[in-house]
Image (cartoon, rainbow, N blue to C red; front, side):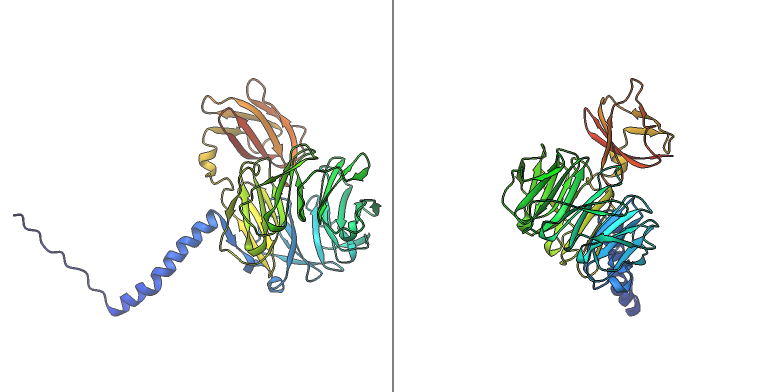
Length: 409
C-alpha cells in the first residue's frame, strides 16, 4: 500500500485570523461592486450634491453618454453633469421644474411650477422665463430638427413653444390633467387620466382607441409606433398611431415613465423602485435592478444600448453601465467591422461571415430615428448628409441585429 505523507496545515496567528475575517467580506464586496459597475445598474446617488439627497428628482435629459441635466420638483434647482454623473454643478430657475428638453449642449427648455417655461442658451448657466401655461407643466417634447416644441400640463393645458413665446392649443380636455406629451413631425400625442389625445391636421382630436387606464408617460419613436405606461403596471403599444394594444409588463406597480431607444429596446420605471426592460418591442418585459431601491422612480433615459440613467424620489440616481441587451458588446460585433470610425460621412461595413444586410436605421443619441438607408453593392454607407455628432447604427442582417456607435466628424 503506497504511503502518503500527511500534509501539515499552516498555522495562523490570532491576528491573521482576525484580518481574514475582516478582509474577506470586503474583498468579496469589492469584486461584486466592480462587476456591478462594469455590467449593470449602479446606484450613484451619492455623486449628487448634498442638496439633492432628500429631493424628489422629477425629470432628466442627456444629450449623450456624459452630459445631462436633472430637475427636482422640490426646489428651483437643476443639476448638470458633463462626466456621466461622476460630478454635478448646480443651476437655478425661478421656480421648481418637472420637465426638461435639451436640443443640444447649449439650447434647452424646462418647466413646472405655475406652468412657467424657462429657456437657456448657454447650457443652463442661466434660465430665463418666456411665459406660463397657467397650470403645472408636466412634459415637454420637440419634434426632430425642429425649433418649435410642445408642452402639456394640468387642466388639459397644451401649448406650443418657440424661442420667445408660448401659444395655447385647444386640447379639448379642460377637466383632465395631462402627464406626458410626445411629438413626431407634425403629429403629437398626449396622455393623462383615462385619456390619450392626438394632434393631427392642426387640431387635437380624440381619435385614439385604447384600454381604460390612467397613463403617466407616452413615447413615440415615429409617426406610427409608440408606447404608453401608467397605473397598476399597464403598458400599451400602437403600430398605426391610433389603435393601442395592452402588453404584459410583469409588474403591478404603477409606472411613471418609459423610454425606447429603438423599436426593440425600451425601459419603464415606477413605484417601489421598479425597472422593467424589453428587447423585443414589449412582446415580453423583464424586471431589472431588483433591490437597488424602494424609492419611487420618476424618469428614465438611455443614450446608447450600454448607457442609461434613472432618477426618483429621495435623490435617487441610478446608472446603467453594462449592455442593455444582455450581450457583451465585443461578442455582439465580433463579425462586424465598421470603418473608418470616426469618419467624414462615408462608412464601409464589413461582415466576417455569410450574413446579408437587409436594412440600416440611423438613430441620434436621444433615441430618435434619423434615417433608414441601405448599403451599396460594396457595403459602402453614405452618411454625408448627417451633421457632425455621434450616432447609433442599427444594422439588420439575415441572422441578427448589430448596433454600432459611430462618430461623424
